[in-house]
Length: 279
Image 1: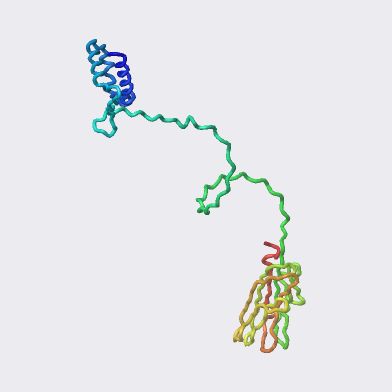
Image 2: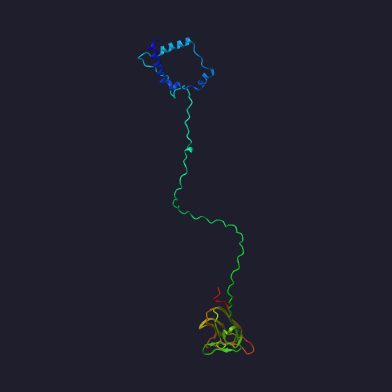
């Protein structure tokens, strides 16, 4: 074999290496361990000569194209199974940067709906006793009261008559005038008044309790064969200088009240219940 033959052999080997290198380079796992276990043995000389002749025999001649390499497709049946190369994974955590600055505060959101009232909490502990307060103003008490009577009978005439009393039971601070028969208010507030009379048989009894010039309530008894005790009471709110008194109706009809010098049948009383300045 001359230099020209050697050139052809080398050229064919290079073509085979480029064409079939990727496929032939993938050796199955079972075949990769075989050379390690058995070891590589050196071929005898006659085998080397024989292989060289076979290589020259099957190698393409000068000017001829090399035979197609025995390549395989993954979808062909009987294709050797090769181990898949794992895709490298990148740990993103090692790429995390430093913490940035705090951003600006956002806009306030809309108010939510009002929730339902919660359960009542537990009673808290008792607090400490407070200090003594400053002394208050001196208590101011207000009083007004009277009680008077009459021992003489009274008959009606052609005009109204004020019932004047001749007996004084109580007249606190002299607020009831015995000469005019009127109570004068010097302590404004709410008062209670009561009038009691004895009727005359076969005669009518017709009186009014007056506030200033106003008729407030009436005391009335019809004509009867016997005389009886009749009463009337009420409460009035009075201002300063108001007057309260009893008036006998004029003589359009026979009208009278009974009494005598031995007993008191007619009484008129009143007292302050609540001062106007009190809460």
